[in-house]
Amino acid sequence: MLSNVSIWQLLIVLVIVIAIFGTKRLKTLGSDLGGAVKGFRSAMDDSDKGSTEQIGEQSEDASFDNTPAEEPSKENHG
Image (cartoon, rainbow, N blue to C red):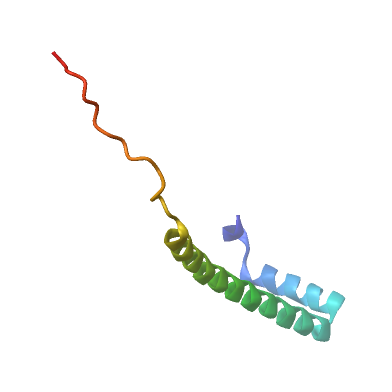
């Protein structure tokens, strides 16, 4: 899809976007977008660390001592 777009067409689109929004607004938009990406990445890193900690806590809390053990059947097969 983008293989048919030349550098000149991209430059024309860039000039039109700058003319419509202005450089100050684009700079603000870029910094806001960068901050959002950083926040997203840090949230993903925090959630990955938290999920592994939660898994470890759940396995420590799980207790199966009170479940009845299955006894082998004493039936005579034959």
